[in-house]
Image (cartoon, rainbow, N blue to C red):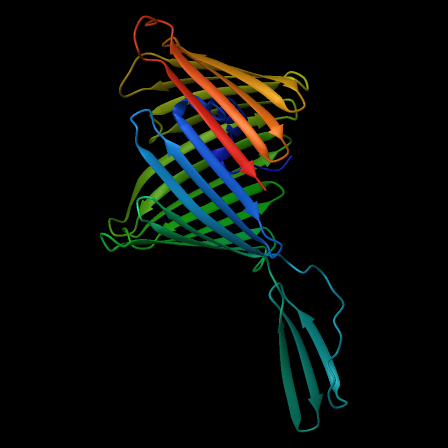
Length: 326
């Protein structure tokens, strides 16, 4: 199994506990479509239980790599030639007595451009270049602009992934500037990782965290210490069989509480096109969810949460979600 990023060491249990619970929004709509020239469009809209609405329009273009191909010498005068290849360019050198010419051919490298615009009137652009400079290295440039306040943002991220290593670096170029780095090493399913934040102007470490875990095809377990090693959590995920998944998470904030928070959840696949989920925490708040593929490209999600200690009060929530994928 590949080594996950630091934030994903406990991903299996976090997804089971947090994803596909539709009560968090009163109503949600998501429409996806793809064009033949590798452009993907996504429109999302949400209505909260406070009757506030938000939306997002996103367009994503991917210039897919061409792959390995056979280089053909361009038509030119007879010459002694040399050929070299890099991840970005092919180089062809033609040499004759008293003359030399260098030809450079650009190779398509898997560039991805994402442009989004939301109802807060914020414009965001993301450029991704994957496996171009070195195999396993992904570079990201993110720019944001808020026309109403003229606020600007610029971030540069690096992701480097190898067989037993996964490292990331996030740089905020306009605020601070600041840097956040994390790394995970893994061997035979065992994982160990750490992260740290650094403020360049203050020349000081602003945050740090650590985590250990174990990952197998059927189950994962992780222990993390976040917020400068003050918030501890232990999580467990188990894929019981092809239909049943179960997981739990315990957390403790050493600075603000002496109590341990606990959440347990389970997912049951009813048939190939639908599943149900349920979870409950130590405060007695239970949530249920149902997801069904109505037809190819159309998914319906239903969810509800109940405060089992206050069943006579109006603290319960119900939500729906529609996803259209063309």
